Length: 468
Image 1: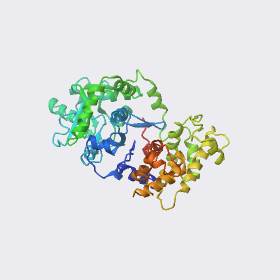
Image 2: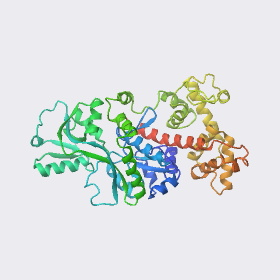
Image 3: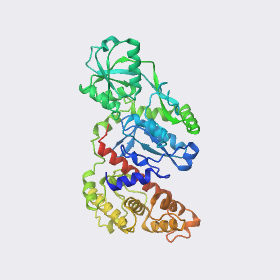
C-alpha cells in the first residue's frame, strides 16, 4: 500500500466530511474511530457509511464505474436524504455486525437474509423492512443426477460460511431429517459466488445459495443447478443499530414506497433479471482482472514519470472524461484529461485527442500544481490541493488556504479545513473579499472528493483483482 493511499484513507475515512464512495477491503482498519449517529445527525455530517461486500450482487467496479445492486439502492436511498455514500468492505462477512456495533459504520446493505436467529442473542442490531424474495437451494453441478431427496445427501459435503443463513438452514435440515451430511466451513472472506465457482469446477462437492445469486451465476456461464429447495421463501433486509430509530424508520418508509416500483425494479432487473438485460453479461465477460481503463499502459507510463500512483491518474481521468478520448466539454476542454487549449499549449500537447499526448500533458499539469504547494503540506493534502488547483485554478487555492487560516482552521489540511473555506468562496460576503473572487466551490470540492474516493476503490480493485 502506498503512503499516499493509506494517508488518504486515514484522512478521508476518519473525517466528518469524507463523503467517500468506497473504502477498499482491508483498509477500513484506518477508520476505527467509532461514531454512532442517527439519521438527523448523519444529515448534518453529510454522509452515511454503508457496510457491504465486494461481489457481483452487492458492489464492484467495472471499467472505472462503481456498480452493484446494493450500491445503487444505497445511493438512491441516500440521495433522497441529502447524503453521500461511503462504502466499507470488511475483510470478512462475520466482521460486519461488529463494525456496526462499534460505530465504524452506519448500516449494513449486503443481501443479508432475514432470519430470527441472526440477532437473537444480540438484540442491539435490527433488520429493516424486507426486500426481495427468494428460495435457498442446495446447489450442485449441472450434470449431477445423484440427488433426488434429502436422504441422498448422506455422506455428501456442503460448503458454506459459518456466518451465513445457509449454515443455519443446513443445521436445521440435519436436525429435522436426521440425515448425516457434512457441513464444511469456508473462510469468512469467501463470497457465495466464489463458492459456486468452486462447485462448478469440481473443487467443492455441494453448496447452498439464494436462487437469485444462483441464477446470476448460471447466466454468467457457471454450469450449476438447484438440487433441493431448503425452506419457504426468504427475504433480504438492511441492518441498523437499535439506537437508530430515525434511520430505521426512513429505510422502512423507503422500501414500503419503492418496493415493486419502477426504480427498484429497474435496479433489480439490471443485476438479477439478465434475460431482460443481457448487457450485464457483456460487462462481466469483458472485464479483465486488474484492468481499469483501455489506457492503463499509457497511464502507468506517465504516472511513473511524474511520480503519481497510476490509479490516482485513472481516477482523475474518469472524472474528467469517463475514459472518452474524444470528449469536449461545454467550456472547450478536450480529451481524456480535459485540457483547455491554453493549458494544452502550456504543457506541450500538440493533439489533445491523442490519448498518449493528452495523458502525458494532463499528468504533467497536475504535477505542476503539486509542485506549487508549500513543502510543509503532507503528501495526501498536497494531492488534494493539486487536484483542486487543476480543476479550479491555483488562485482559488491561495484564497481558500488564506481564508482557512483566518477562520482558525489549518491551511495545510484539505478535509474539514481548506474545503470548508472553498465552500465559503461561493458566497458574496467572502468572494468579494477574496483576491481571485468567486469560485465554483461545490464543483471543486466534489471533484477532489470523488477522485480521491475512486482512487481508493480503484486501488482495492486492482490489488484484490475482484471482478465479476
